[in-house]
Length: 314
Image 1 (tube, rainbow, N blue to C red):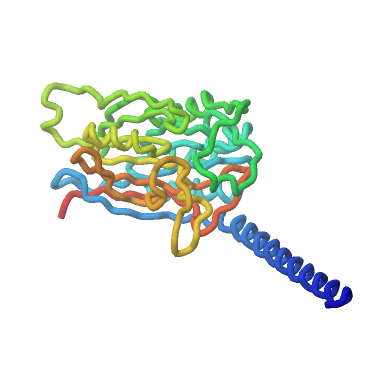
Image 2: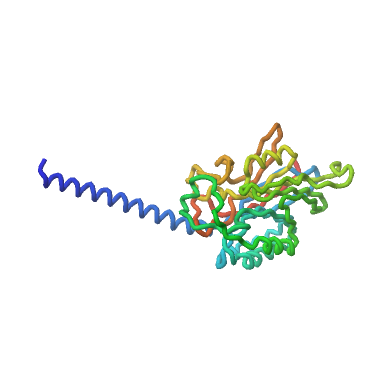
């Protein structure tokens, strides 16, 4: 084989690598562009769950999670305000509301119409600390870790804003509320992703209180298995959680590649039963409404709020 032939083949191989690399880059840019578009395609997932005592009228819970608000997200703000038109009986916010140090005021403005309704909330890690700059694909490497020098967010002011709006703080505490003439017992925890959960048990009421209609609801940010096991073992009737973003970067027809915790990926979003020590409790994991501002894409996993209608057995 002559030197000219070798050089010709080398140039052909080089052109092949260049074409392949160019095609890969183009595909990556297309996927990123699609992900930027999909992150603003907000949807309402509706579920029905027959767990109310017999004879009770339907009760509607609007489940919000992982808003990750950034100033200037006008489309997200308008969509959040529009959810008040659903007129839910209860709003449950499972944390990670912020993604910017200046997000508290515009977020509270966006949620103000929803604070006309009863609500409960717990925090997530991105209510305490701002996200850090990282490769968006690092989300696929497993559960995220706290930054070595996190930037503190104004969680006290956000919590105060929620409280002034009438929403109940369930951070490592429990409380009963009478809603639509029925007692709801809530128990919540601080963010398990930061290992801050402390269990407060269920509210203590009057003697023979369990003889009357009531429902026990656990409110969690990150659905780690240890927390789901605890509340299932303690007799929760419903578990509500977020954190996973539904996988955020999913494969169409397959689903989530990661859950950002130890939850199996097929449980990264949706309504499923959780089993522990012979008990079964339904758990709703929200795919969330936002993303970190440093990973602002969603693929095959649209941002969602969940309208969960509780009914009595038919």
